[in-house]
Amino acid sequence: MKSKFHLFLVLSAMLWTVQLPAQTNSSTMQPGPGPEAACVPATRDNPKNWMSRHEKFVAQAKRGGIDILFMGDSITDNWRSKGSNVWNEDYAPRHAANFGIGGDRTQHVLWRIENGELDNIHPKVTVLMIGTNNSRSNSADDISQAIGMILDVIHAKIPDTKVLLLAIFPRNRPNDTPEMMDTIHRVNEKIAGYDNGSTVKFLDINAKFLGPDGKVPADTMADFLHPTERGYKIWAAAMDPTLDAMMK
Image (cartoon, rainbow, N blue to C red; front, side, top):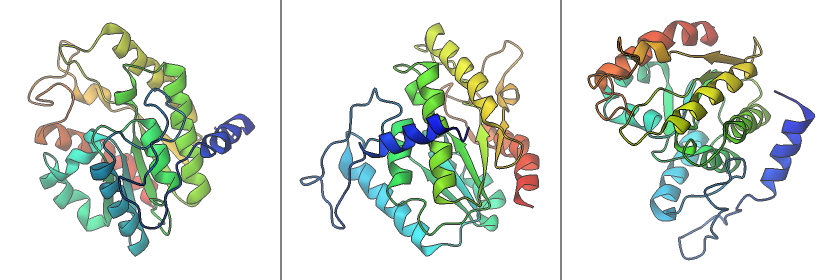
């Protein structure tokens, strides 16, 4: 995972990163690269709201005191809503922070962590899951490569953290194509190889979400993508033994 090739990609991607002045607004911000580039750090096409959330995460990071950091998209973001009861009982007391933003892809997480969200932060464990929103437009190779770049940037910024890398969760929305589902499956196979036994642990808990028919039932993910409260309980119960061991 820490190959020269990956480090070259990280440095190359940084050349594309949008650099913002200390005081930024939507009228002065330059747009990032297009949404298809999974490995190139990029801002979102709704910069006002997205940038505001990013800046709040940067401010939270500066305050410090974070022992567990969750990074990801809406599935992570929704710990604030559908998963809030589980979060408040299980993770808030352990000084966890949620840096998930709904709709994010790998390129958006890359931009965020290169632009302040990991500054002055020293979590014992970073929980990362990203890539489902890339699965319609990017190849498994591109998505897994981008996830490898995210891991490299995390360890460049906060070398003492361990990363709990989660497999992209299963989904079966009516418009989810077989090709997209195959992409997610192949990404999970590829990123499993990033587990190095020390700083990165890969964890696939997807079987916990599936019913007897091999699909996600509505009581676990009402829209067959985002967990319900029951889904977040399943997530926590399946993840916590590994997370607890990594926190020691």
